[in-house]
Image (cartoon, rainbow, N blue to C red):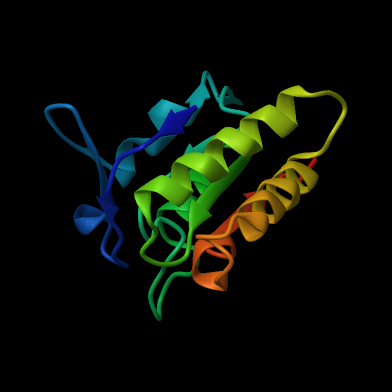
Length: 138
């Protein structure tokens, strides 16, 4: 599942949400999104918006951590503000690597980061190192 949308994270559940086409999906509803009859239905959640892996002093890993706790097996998210063009390149490279064969999610993230690093406009760590993989790395 890929969500290219913004959200807000807070230690207060009622203030933690992602945006959808007509409003907000509260973190309390994540269980419904990522599980069915108590079983995990989302193998990989990609949150390709700014600061989706940023938590606060009371809860680490932000929306990405909340999604894993709610049942997503793994989540890719960003730690800080990210550039739209470099994010599109990262996500595209990640998916290409992942579908290329027997490769782990962690290796696909690494290779996508290397592709950004090799691009003349995105050599700075702020472009390629913002992404983290949380949960199942395989």
